[in-house]
Picture 1: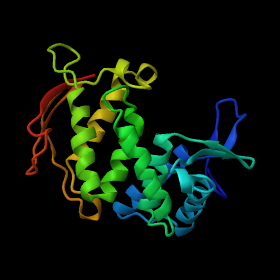
Picture 2 (picture 1 turned 90 degrees about the vertical axis):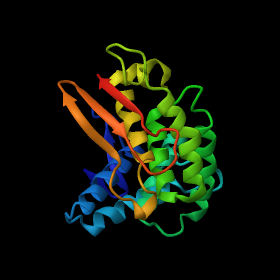
Picture 3 (picture 1 turned 90 degrees about the horizontal axis):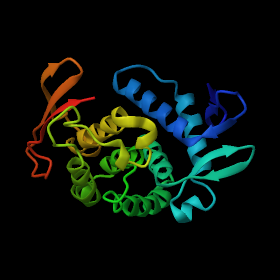
Length: 238
C-alpha cells in the first residue's frame, strides 16, 4: 500500500498512518530482489520510494547523518543508527543522485554504532549497516568485517547443548522481544553478507549447507579471504 511519499505504516488499531523509513526500506529490498530475479518492477514505484528517502534525509540529516524514522502530517520523527543504515542502503541501492553528503555523514554514525558492538549490540541495525557497508566497499568494508562482523561471530553460543550455534537474545537490544530465533537469524545474515564480494562485484555466496536434520542446519563457512570467521562450524538449533 504505497502512498505518495514511500510506504505506509498502519498500526493494528488503524490509528497510525505515516510514511515510515523502516517499512519503505523493506519494500525497496523486496523490489530490488525481484529485479535481480528478472521480474519487472514499475519505475514509478521506485521513484516514489526515493521521494520518501529524500524527505527522510532532509533537514538536519544532511549535516548529522541521522535520518528520519517517520514523517507524519509534516512532523519528522528522528531516527537512530539503524534508521540511518536503512536510508543509506535504500539510497545506495536505488543509485539516488545527490546522496553523497548524507552518506558521508551516515558513515560516521555507522562507525560509531559498530564500535559499540561488544557492549549491547542491536543486530537489527547492524544487519542493515552491514548491507550498506558492503555496497560502499573498500577500506570501510574491510574494517567493518574485522571490527564488527568478527565480534558478532564471537557471540555465537559454542557450549554443547540445545543452544549450540545460536545467538543469545539477552545480549541484544531487541533480543528479549524477538527471542532466540530473531537474534540467530540476524547473526547468520550479518555473517552471510560478510562472506560475500562487496558492491556490484558480489558473487556466489560462500555459506555452504553441508547437511540438514529436523529443526537444525549445519553450516560451514569457507572463503579464500583471510578473515577471523574462516572455518566456523556450528549446529544451529532453534
